[in-house]
Length: 302
Image (cartoon, rainbow, N blue to C red; front, side, top):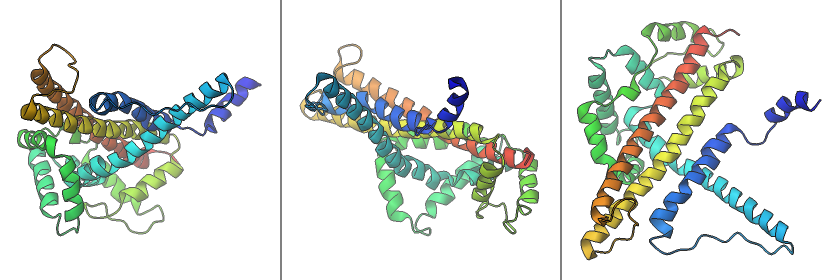
């Protein structure tokens, strides 16, 4: 009897995979970075969650639960800030993932870099025209330490994460089918709002595709939050390197070896590589989520 009820109980669980992996997981991953770059250098103590409940067991239970909720809420805050600083910056440079898929499907391996560079250039020069000058400027200020990385990616054409698995014929099938679902005529173009209609249709009509889509959504959400953690760490490492150049004081404990400045530079490079990897992964899994929805729309059964 208990075994037969277990799947239903799991479906009714108040915490989904997104909560556990993205909110709680990223919040937990944040702790060692806060400890290294803030609490240890500034000699700060962590918040004390102990409360006198009149019982040692109750005290420990409340302390542990308070810590878990602190981590979970921190993950929520982290995800929201990442959506503003990481996600919206990516959207400003590349456009929505649906636009990326259209352009990528129409390009070839030899023309891809030219197409992506033109896309990025056009979207950035039209910031003022789109009424997003202030918000884009503020967001790009957060990315100042990694702008050289973006420049290298742009010049070298490191856009493999942008390649879609969709062939132009699949998008032609979308164009032929999307007007038949009762939402009126919808153009599948760079400037039309076609993807959300398709996404909601798939979520409500293609139940077998939703778990695969959700899996990509969880992974991309995790990498988005981790991007913000590494970006914060890069800023702090820059600050401590600058502080060392000005007065010779080094506040970070060397991870390896004893040469503070040399290890600080190595740590900075490692953080930039980790940030770049997570950014690529975030964009790639965002793209795969959309591709899965499009494939399900074209080839799925109602």
